[in-house]
Image (cartoon, rainbow, N blue to C red; front, side, top):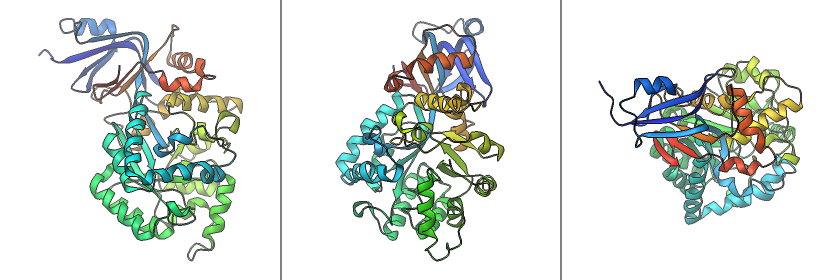
Length: 431
């Protein structure tokens, strides 16, 4: 039976399967109907199979350009867009000096609405079509973001009810009431988001975690980003009843119900063997943010190198994130390049472009439970993809990604503008 309403996309197709395997179609054809992928094959096979159905109206020839899956940015703060390139001498100082004053501006509903429209329109044009997002404390800012975000984005308001600026401090009741309302309104699109243990009381984390678990929502926070942060967290909690003998940052999250298969912990750089074991046992995922952790000279916070081999040895799931605004640029190509560069400089093997692509796409989708319908370019999955121009001829996935990404290392802002076509469920968001 002939299939109607098909659209055909021709180009070099990269389809990540895992850390080391990526299907490569040098002259490929992506066949889409109703926003769903019907076929992925070589163009020559596609010509034979669909010879009576390909026409000028339904055929898009991208020539020598790369077609890759839409990215999942698994850790970013949309409300920090304006502080991405601000000086970053240390995490806690950067928060106090730049981030918190910026987030205070979202108290105004009209400002939140305006910024949400511009930010989420821009992020999808970089190729990011899903992920996990931090908003400000304000309920209306989450609502503004939810209204305009296209794709598989989970969004949550940061919870701050202790050790925070007055303008960003909520009561325990306000925090939990807002959480309950947003869960009721957005269900599993909402992600429970204590900013980090420094700013969120144990009581709010416990009760909020229970609300999220009952609703089947994900949870996210920051964990062990810098040694100074860890020391401060432990010094605070050892004075709180019930936490006097706590041994680690991770244990605090365990005692407050924050760990589990639906939990995403940002950074996880400075973890002890006991913490790694705890994260593994609870099936908690870690989100690695290389551009944010990068040296200050590279516009990062200088937090240290993420040991992905140690994480994998402990069988902990992980994916990549930009950590906007700790990370300076939106594009996941910039994140992949930083991941490759930092490990190469330290002599760590295995941090390939192929691995970076998988961790920036399918790995994130799998962590969010979306791997069966999104994350890569398989028959039956949603047609979520990005097209990048490629000038050089290539013979394999690693070479293709290197020739795409490497030339822009010294022109990092250009990564954001690189896509020539972005497609979400068959709809062109950029063309």
